[in-house]
Image (tube, rainbow, N blue to C red; front, side, top):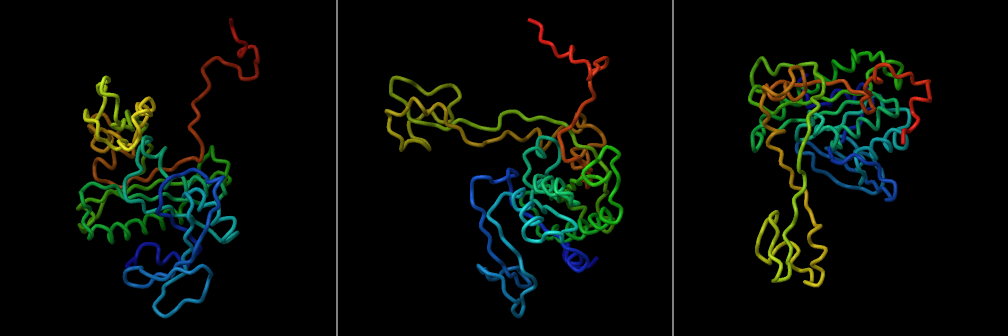
Length: 307
């Protein structure tokens, strides 16, 4: 394929793509949308409150929703294009969504999970950042490669014997493309079927510095021992609440640059660490371990509490 990623797909069937983050449904807010009309070559265009015909130079009509990915996914499938969506592509997200630590907080995967629960084929696509900043010439070959992977998945979707949402089909796929120099080489990147690395993370939030009474020095976990800080505008009389003020500040070194010896071979984290593309089939549910050996699930006596 020589055209920009996903361009050919528009001619074959309806798709929807997402780029934003977070994965919860918005159940208390009103979701508003607008129409957007991008132009070649940079995608800049006009915004309209109502749908209209394309003007000269405009390539297509987009709908922008101010909702989370899962919210947008459901609205697109059931409200905007009911019965017309064949495949939902969430992404490409700029950043990896490999391993449990990233996947379980991923809005990109969240949108794909949402659409798969609506019985729609779904793919979450992420571009793993390796170099900072990512060279711009990596993106077009990443788009080309992603298009080929998506087409292959569409044409041979795969079966899941335990699947029930789409009559035994795989619910969704999670694809991670590392943004590395190998994208520019003729042979391209190796593509691997993978399973999700069940890793873990530690502290994700850091306490914010706050003013305290002069008689009470800063605690050992303070980021700044001075009385000036992000919360210095709060009156000193409110200092009793300052100790419970935190901000997202994750310690990600071990997740982004893991010791390869500790990463399971065949996992998505292992493939990304090797500079390879990972393709992971997923179920739209939490993992279910087998029942403990010897327990009869029909024997209610097993569940009597012992005092």
